[in-house]
Every structure is written in structure tokens, then in C-alpha cells.
Amino acid sequence: MRLSWTALWFAFASSVGVAMSCAQQFPVDSMTETETGGCTPGTEDCRCDSENECEAGLVCAGSVCIADSAVTTNQPTTTSETGTDETTEGPGTDTGTATSTDSDTTTEPSECDPGEGVGANPDCSDPDAPYCSSSGVCTDCSGIASCGDVDAGTPACDETSGLCVECTPSDAAACEGTSPICDAATSACVPCTGHAQCESGACRLATGECFPVTNVLWVNKLAANCPEATGSLTKPFCEIQSAVNAVPENTPTLLRVLPTAPYQTQVQFIGTTVVAVFLDSGEQNNFTLMVADKSPIQLNAGAEVYLDGATIRGDSDLPDPGVFCKSADLWLSRSVVRNATGYGVEGEGCELDISRSAVFSNDGGGVSVSNGALRLANAMLTNNGGGSSPAGALFVDTATLDIVYSTLAFNVAFGSEAIECNGNSQGTAVNSVLFGQGKANSIDCPGLNVSNSAIDSSGGIEDGGDIKLYNPMNLNLNWFAGPAMGDLHLTASGANEFATVGEVMDGLPRVDYDGDPRPEDGLDFAGADRPMR
Image 1 (cartoon, rainbow, N blue to C red):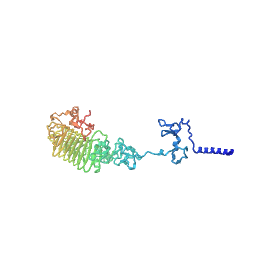
Image 2: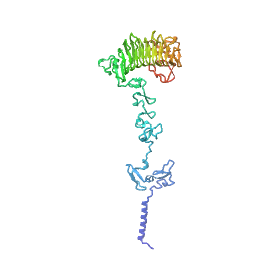
Image 3: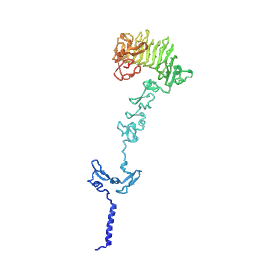
Image 4: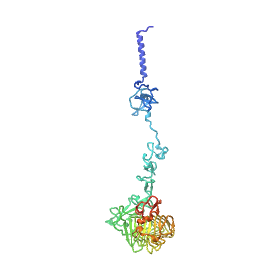
């Protein structure tokens, strides 16, 4: 059959239209072999290089290079930068808008759930990162908002260990009351054990509290307008007794005394008085208390008294002690008691603690304690007593005795020149020098256990070991700087004698009479003085 030209033209046009329609419906990739370096994307002959890299316009997918558009258009949906979901226009269509795929917005799962607790979180088992932060990450204490959120009892962050602790030297807010000091070694609040630890400069050693900085009264013998005194720094009291009278009952109060002139009024502490009478801070010379025909200091009936930086001088024709204590507690530190016609310090039913102090040239003897307790630490007792004294340095009657790092020498008595004990008296003496002044038995105290000490008496004690025994006839005054003036610091020859008699032990003072440091371990000097070599 012959077709007309019209029919042929119609058939040609139709075939071209179909072809064009197919081309529009299934577009081919515009990347030519020339543009891809001769490989066809997506085929085995177009593989990624050793570093999983491809030529420009291609990306590596499963070791084969494919067109970059295949990656961005294979996802059914994307999220725009503004957070609006957009549907792609179709395979191979590029909208030209910066988008991120669903996989781009996926975040790492949290290590821990802060809702299960900041501390003791079950997901934070690493001891170096035991806490769960608000962002769900296990961390040390530096990564959490507050250690108080972990435990109210451990509110401070220790940067060294990374742990929440009770306190640090820079954050001791939790330390108060009877535990006002932060122990850097344990990061725990502990009682004060020395005056220098407290902000006020005074520690209530009986309880471990610090005297409050708000409870301070000043005393100045030469102050003007004494009748108008209030105890303030600008209107100080003129006598120590006036300040004591102003102390409320059961209110720990610190008295700061200026050493302007001798105080000549007897000071009595009675009742529930809790008071510290201290040399004013920054002063070098002790304040002096010297009272005619009376004991300069008297404690009665439950008083709790701390004396520091005082020189107490007797000035009586009667056998009055320099300090008399009855049924009270006394801590005497960095002080001197001298020239009393009775004992330097006498206690009946008292707790006496004498540290870094000298008791000398008292006619009745050095210290007497009955029905109580006495502790000597870094103390010097010399040139006390006389021919009618029952004991030269110490008389102990039915009491306990604790002597550490102390020197007793050249005291005189018709009884024992160093220590005389009566009744059921017991105690210990460690790292000390216990001499008389030539008698064969300068110590008569069978209940006293003596160790690591130098003594001149072979009997009258309980031998605790490591004792260096001297012949009482061979004692040398030149071992000491000035016994007649209460000075038992060691000379060079004395240092050679006592350098290795003592031994460092736990619980003993870490400084000597002058505050010089003692060693951390090993052997040490016996006695109150450790010469600085």
C-alpha cells in the first residue's frame, strides 16, 4: 500500500515526540566519560583510590565512585537549616537550598542520666569521673554545678583528686563549731589543736573550738580615761581584772593585753568563765603581772583559762604561789612564772597544761599538783625550791603526770630534786631531760614510766627503755645557757650530749620551746630545746 506524504510526515513527527517525551521522563547523567577521567560512575571500572577518594564531582560509596548528586538525592526527606521539613522534587533534582540529612542531626547518646543522681550514678563507675553532669556526661567534681548537690556533707571540690570532700584549704566553709580547721591531708574538718590555727589566734583546746573574732576585749595599763573604758581597741580597759569582769558567763572571750607597764591588780577567774588572756598580736615582749602580797593569778570553781605571752612574778613575803588553781582548768603557754615565795604553779583538783614555758626561781618549788593532772610539753623548770621544799621541780600527789620534750635541771629540795610523787600518782615521761642537782635519787615516782630520756637517777621510776643514765655528780652547768635565769637552751656541748637521746613519735609536739620545727621521723634531741644547726 502506498502511503501519502501526509501520512509519512505524521508518523515521523509522532516517533520524534515519543523519543523526546522519554528523554524528559528519564534524564541521563550529564557527567560524560571525559569529565570523569574515563570511568562510568557507579561501575566497577570507577573505583575509589586507596584513601577512599574520588575525582571532583564524585564521592566514594562502598569502594565505588558515584555521582555526588546520587548521595544528596537518595534520601526521601531532608531538614532545612530553618528546621522545616522539605520533600525533594524528584530523583536527581537539586533544590539549591543548604540542607542537612536526618543522619546529620543525630547526637551521641548520653553517658548518664542526671535524673538518677549527680553522685552515686549507676552509669558513672570510673573513679576518676564518678559524677553525672547536667549534660549527661560522667566527670570529676570540676564538671558539676555544685558538690553540695552530691552530698551536703561534702560541699567542696578537691581539684587534686577530683572528688567532692568536706573541705579544702581554700574552701573550709563547712568547718565550724568544734571542728573549725580543715586538715589538708584528709580534706576533713577537725578540732583546733594550736592557737595559730585560729583566725582569732586563740584555740579553746578543751573543746577544739576557736575563740570567736567577735568576742575580743583589749587591755592597756597606760590607757587614758579608764573609767570610760569599754574594752574596745580605742577605749581599752586599764586592768586585766576589769576586762575579766566584763566577760559574760559561758561566752568564750579573748582578752588582748598590751605590755605597756606591769599590771599590779590580782586577776581572779571564777564560775563559768571561759577566757583567753593573750599578749596582743604583734608584740614581742610579754606583758607582766606582779602583785604585792598575793598570788598574781587565781582560778576558782570551774573556770577555764588560757594564758599566753605572760610573765607572772611573785612579790610577796607570804608563801603564795605565782598561779593558784582550785577546781579549774588552766593552759599556760609561751609564758614565764618566776620569783614566787611558794610554788610557781600550784593546782588542787585542776587540769594543768604548761607548754613552751619556763618556771624558775620559785622558793617553794616549780609546780605542785594534787588530785588532778599535769602535762608538761617543751617546758623548762630550773633553779626552783630550797632546803625546806618537798620537791624541787615537780610535786605530784594522787595525780597523773605527762612529760614530753621537757627539761628539769638544777632544782633543789630536801626531798627529790626533780620529781616527788605521793599517793597513787602515775604517768609517762618521754624525750626529756630529768636532772637534779647532785643527789643520788633525784626522782621518786614509781608510777612514772620513763623512756627515751636522759636521767641521773637509777631508781624511783619505771624503766620504759632507751634511757641515757648520768652520774648525778657529773652534771655540767655548761650544757645549758643560763639555768639561774631559767634558760635551759642547749649550748654546743649540751647539744652533743642530748642530740640522739629522744625519738620522734606520733602525737608529740612538732616544734620545740622556741617554735622551731622538729624532724618528721628518726632520732631527736631530748629536752625542750632543739638547737638549729
